Amino acid sequence: MQVNHGKRGPLARIKPGDGVVYYSPSTVYRQKDGLSALTAIGYVRPGEPYQGVMASGFTPFRRDVAWIEAEEASIRPLLDRLDLTAGNPNWGYQLRFGLIPLSDHDFTLIAEAMGAKLQEVAASTL
Image (cartoon, rainbow, N blue to C red; front, side, top):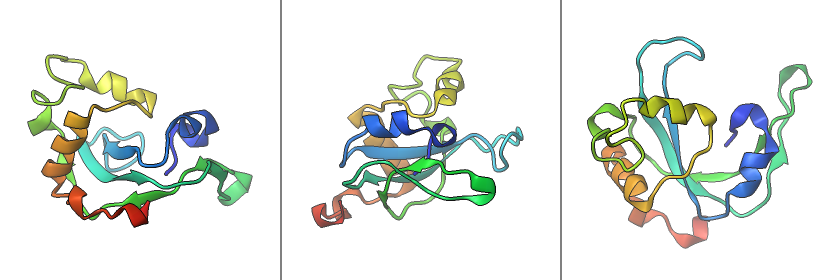
């Protein structure tokens, strides 16, 4: 996984076994096409952040994740039920900060919405 344009700090704060959910506001970066979907879910694997190599010398920091098979799900039907967004008309603003904590309740609710089978993730995959 890569967050906050490849910064190391946020990735160093998470621990192996922490759940991760990716939220995608749009299909194309910096375009407002209204996607507003939860697009990936998994658990952080053991290990430290490392630098990947991309074009033009860009070397963003990354963490390995055991991704779970899941379907993309709109966040909109969940807005009133998630601790993160319930009663907050400006819920999207906080997601702009990149890596933010989720409650266990929210992680489970999102996993269910995405059809992810959390119980099938064996400890050996982490």
